[in-house]
Image 1 (cartoon, each protein chain N blue to C red):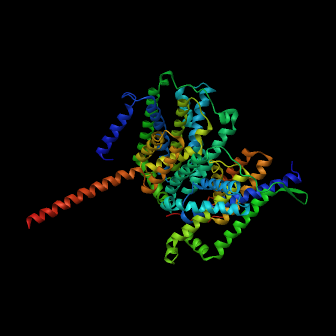
Image 2 (image 1 turned 120 degrees about the horizontal axis):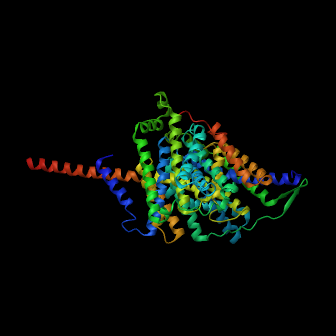
Image 3 (image 1 turned 180 degrees about the vertical axis):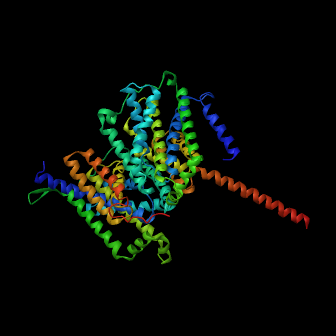
Length: 326
Length: 292
């Protein structure tokens, strides 16, 4: 990334961190917290997408994380860091077990299998009512610690976690493993021939992504004080994919922008609930039809436009110079 | 529990469910196989079919045998606007279509909420009572569903295999560019395929809404079913969609009658996942040659 881009992103991060201080109201903080939590899911899914596999079962893994965190707290009384860790470990373990089977599949079949897997997990949350409380879910989950009881404190917690998760994914993608992941996506066979352990790389990315989204599940349970299967439907999985596609599938920044866009847009259209959903649907159509590369493509187009404009200006000056000389 | 009466009931229910599932899945697989769009708005068109039947048959009192195809044709004709405004942007773009049509689904479902409110309605039954055949009691309305579906499927089969437009459609599905060089007008072919797909979906939605209930959110179930059936049979495969629909319809009827609805959901999803891992291209799909 260019230095100018880094400075802009740095400023935005500082601005976002300072949100509670510069006098944000409770509404803004709530939206901010939900955005931060969703950034975890979107960026972690981005890691899987970069290997060439789009998972439609990400919310199922988030649910496992959420229920594990909630149950280790309410049933076993584990302290906050431990139950978040358990919430990260449980989906990662499942991903490690089934990943080698699922990730052998080609892209579009992987989409379908993970979709069904997500549905099965959700059915599991509803049916295993002895453990999960069935359709009613689990109530009365206390905040992580008395310190985090205020909205501002929880916002910082969510924000810091999102920042760490995004940085982690960015680090993975920008290092040597990132090159390997790119090679797996571009041509699996060629990567295999070059000695890349393709399946291990894919499973590794999948496990890491599910662990991160498990953290989102755990934090969400703490934030809302309850957990129910309705939060982990295919709609939520789809919304993670939508965030990535709307933002732009080819860059991590796209996932962050997409999460911001998808969470805040319905809030901006608030006022009349049905109309809000209709508008949201129409906007999804327009964005996808007009800029198939996602919102990140807008920036690239703007740059191109600027370049062509300045190019034309230069050419124009050169022409007028020549005209002056002759 | 396995009495003659219950077996007969399971078979008739299974056949009528299969009929509806095959219609829904054929529309879905047609759109995917020919235009490469994942139609997430499929359930919404099924829902519109239900409301169309509600008005044509329930309110205007058009004779039932005319009202059902009329309702489906009406929805398909109106859907041409959606084809022009929305679908055309997403042809041959799988991921973008997934998101864009999800948006269309949201827009249609919540517009329906605005117009018709969320409460559930029921479409008055066209036939009541039972027919006795060799000691089996068969509900007439289910038999009617089976008959309508069979007629439509026969017409569809005839169209695809015996007409020039059907041939053009199959050619376009195989290779868009080669089809164009052979002088096939793919824009028209796409439009016909779209009309047929939405017609079948709306028809299935109308029959489904009459058996169960009618509400703006009723489309979720047909969409899920279309997804599962199409995966089971093989994405884009027309005989696969028919076979998958029949398998799912009978399995669901059998398992949910004797073991409960949740067992049947678990079983059908589990089997489909297992199948996908062993044979990802589905029962009757064609394995893709390895990507470069």
